[in-house]
Length: 120
Image 1: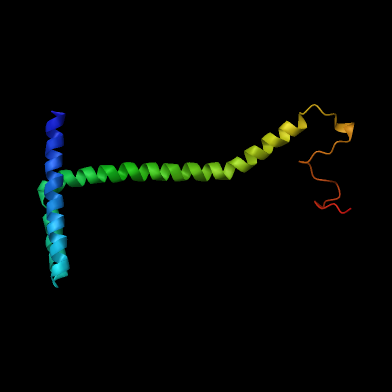
Image 2: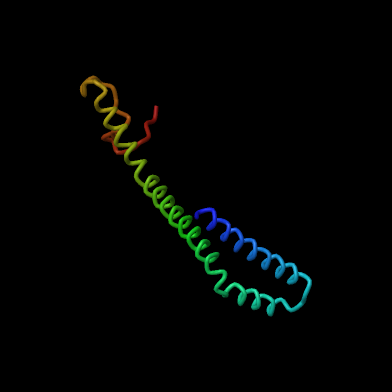
């Protein structure tokens, strides 16, 4: 049964691609391009191409949804990762076992002077 479906879908695709190739090669040879595009549009509206259109719509919807999800995931990752990495590094530097009064400066804390620059 699945083999029959693939054969039918392949036949529909081959028929459609033959029509498209024929129409576009004739478009490049004639001056009446608008009428031929209208004819091609009318051919594609026929019911025998409904399976082709359904397959194309399914393929487009799968690709579009995966693309949108990937874009949203990348956006979320790029927005949150600097903060998460900064917090992780701050916690790691704070729990390194060094005593607060040991005199070693913590690079992740702002100095009391308010300026990030230190002149010699």
